[in-house]
Length: 312
Image (cartoon, rainbow, N blue to C red):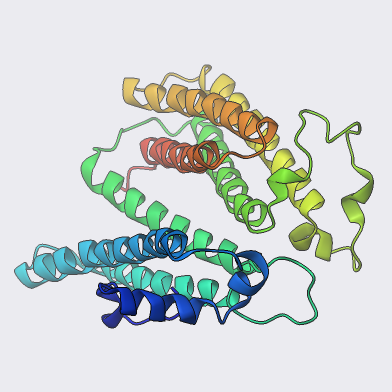
């Protein structure tokens, strides 16, 4: 899909003539000319419906936020603080849709000075993913705050440290998930398919191949994969340390379950990440790994909710 209309595009092509017209529009862009020049109409229909399904799902998500929000607002069921959260969430949903099109548009632009294959900008992909993660995290936090009763935990120094560790670990998990957008955007998972070393070395020779040096962090596939590995290892180490520290503190059963679940999900996620790398990034496994990052972030947010301070 090479154009964007809020309502008009909800109706897919139906006749052969409409499909051919849609295919001809796609043929004007670099992705077809350089990457998919031998694509057939049935193959085009497959990728078109993948994009169409994603966009329609996005619209359904938007309605799932806006319609209930309007209903409960009109009934007077929302407190004043909750009204602010609801407005922010609905605004984020709308922003996410616009950011999605801004990202897709980058993959349709002519880049005469580039020798790379046509792809969406990794910066815009990371912004789109980051916005989605913020929206999801804010939604989950709001739901947990409303549904789960707070524990009246004694405000000891150990509990304060555990709460701070949980916040820092969650931020690290978020950053690791966000770095995955740069891995996906640059196909960085395909440059070194070995673990724990990258090829024959712990630190590859082309780690800082680009100039200026800062470009490597966001544009060099080797550096992007290296950073994602380091962040993943750091996240797993932080989660393990958090679990071990929590064993020294008496916690409610539900809170203890959240800590244990966080470590269990982290172990699965590390296994998925290494398997994805060693098997040359098969799409189903890569998608499962991406879903695992969301499960890990969700569990970390659950733990933060369990440890939140009871207002006086």
